[in-house]
Length: 133
Image (cartoon, rainbow, N blue to C red):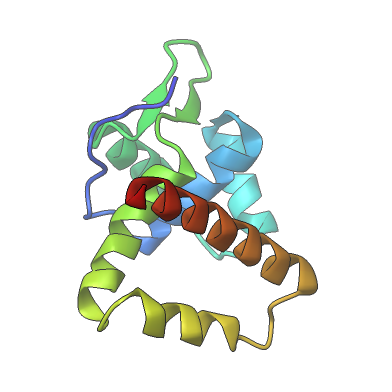
């Protein structure tokens, strides 16, 4: 079940990284999460992972089971995290067009990325056209 509350903007990069581990795994014990962080190349101590998980539970963005060992799972989706940051970014630039212009110049874009962007633009166009009628 995904939490539909407003996501706190105070998530640190370490907490977001921990959420990414949980999104990938579905659920994880503290030991699993620590191992996954190390597998990702992040040098982080066991107690640091424990602290991050407990803070995320306190913030309501991670759920903790009552079983032993406890299992953690994300209570929010990746979109719940990225949307507030993207909204803030859009507030700080001069509008969506310069942002898109910058994005499409990214050399790491693949043809598949561009196809997906085009599909999203086409959907937005259809939605705007319907509103204009």
